[in-house]
Image 1 (cartoon, helix red, strand yellow):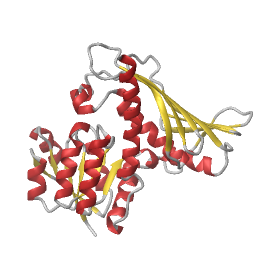
Image 2 (spheres, helix red, strand yellow):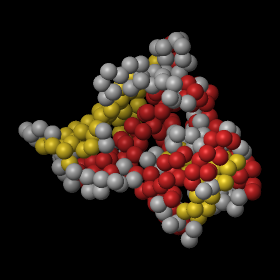
Image 3 (cartoon, one colour):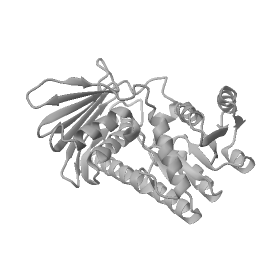
Image 4 (cartoon, one colour):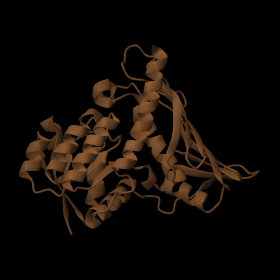
Length: 323
């Protein structure tokens, strides 16, 4: 079975999806659309696809089976509903949407039209997170009790597309963008749902309307707790690390590598099973299985909505503190 893929948005993640699709015999990457036609044409020429300036035109002219949506978050709802109404299965990049109301509208359209909806929460498909999950399941650190994630980076850089700095288009700043990944990781490691979340996201740099720093506390239904801290103003160390604490050891994830510390010992690096493993390809494999069997993906609409609901909660708390 060969599924014809169209890509909406030729931005920074677009090519990762196309390259992953090219490695799979089940997918034919046919067309790409971007409001900046030159971007679509460059991507299309590079990968043997057809280019469009309008995703509506692409969907109406091409005989597609599914679309990958890589648009600014504020445009997710409109594009996904349009695709659903044209009976196309949907691979929607994370985060699901800016609000739970937008999530609900997309989920309703997908259900009404009988199409598969997958949210591109890719973290579970990267080898280092799969390995961490395996170590936890095998009891290497005893019972998982806590997770900490630290991300210190220069968020406000000219290399980042300008729409990321728009509240309307991005739905928020560093917290919306990064915590969607962090909550995905937490849900993956615990196989549990978010029981509560609290914290604060701040727009401390007055040049920007979006938040550039945030700290949150999360408790899962299984009792695991987590603390996430993000700072995007300056990054002398550029720290990006996840720590998983158990009753008998600890796992550190940093730079795509896995480190294990048993009780009373220091960290030792865990060698990868497959060094060239492509998480984006594994993600597509799960999506294709769902399309072929007409079953939900592991990161379906309900999964993505739970993450947006938690992010909304912190933004509401942050807004209330400013009043």
